[in-house]
Length: 168
Image (cartoon, rainbow, N blue to C red; front, side, top):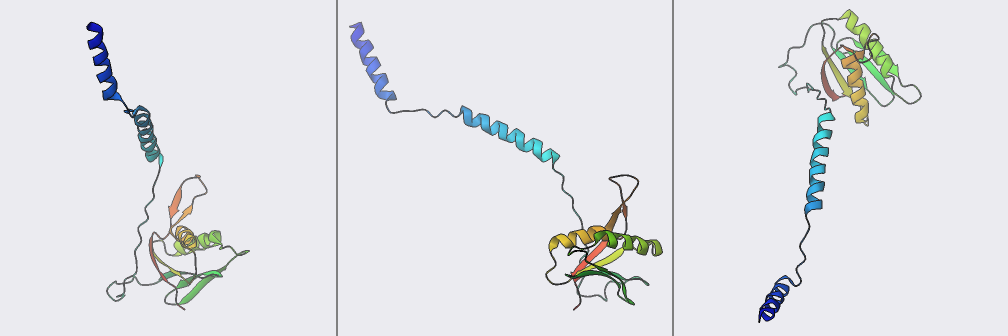
């Protein structure tokens, strides 16, 4: 009689568990823990730079402009023209072998800064079909320059940059 009840219990146990395959989620939990640690550690080492721009307004009479030099850097597909809005062109920096001369622009910006040390405003005006990367590099050349003393130190030139379209 004892063996008959043991067989009955065994048969009910088999019937209850028939066709049931449990999902093993331990490897998935292990992968999620590793992924979370990876994302946390890589987020710590990423560095994001934010550069604020002063966009020109439609109403130019509302913003009083300083007396004297009104610096404009006009970027066209063939050259970079450094211009004074009041008096006209100051220097035309032509492309060399199809590439813009950012070093020449930076050197000229330093000479302008030496003559106008209190000035901090400049406008970068883009011509048609000028790539975004060129805009960023021109803004960097107008905004700061690399000091020769230390490898990672920079000096400020014209940090308040306005961006607009070049005149035709």
